Image (cartoon, rainbow, N blue to C red; front, side, top):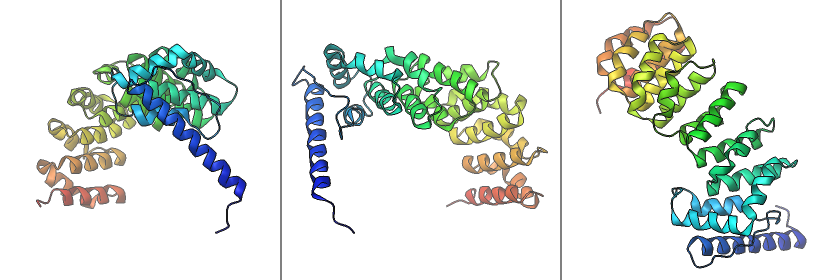
Length: 289
């Protein structure tokens, strides 16, 4: 391994010192030991968003640590500069600002963060989605649904929708008319959230939805662990579409649905190799251990 030049070593040392100083300052404010804040958003080697996330990650928005940081950022004028940079020409500045906004849960910045979802620069749009997921609430969830309407099913958007959506938001949206990409995204989000309140809408989607919606709803019900959905999923094993049979077999395996054992056994001779494999794996999961 080639030795690093002295200049590289010195640069990395200085960057480490700046990161440590930034973390100490933020920790002091968050703990209530200080109320003053002076942050250079362009400081090389110091990721402000990452430093804030170290403190606020997993903390609720009403946490005193979060509220102290938000107050200090707003009082110093830094919060205003961060929001302004969400519309900067530099993709890196937009990305970094989204990370700060998300870490601080700045709800008033949602409209500006939502605009990042339209970016063709994937890291920027992903950063916007992550920020909305952290901020949460109906406005963030609606912004993500609208982005899916315009851009199609996007994995990052769906994951953050599952995180951002308030109670019953996804369930209500599943029962409403939606564009083709939206209902599958909502079904995935419902599965990721694992709320029993979504079982009814997902069962109805399995019965009346498009092929894609039925495939995804099967899997979502398996993720939720809904025993009440077993009869509906079992009936899907006889569907003409092999993707639906495949999804149903996987869901029943996840549910360890002993009542579907004979139907799964029949699928071991299915004409589709993927379905046969899924049936074998599901039956293996039904073996008591």
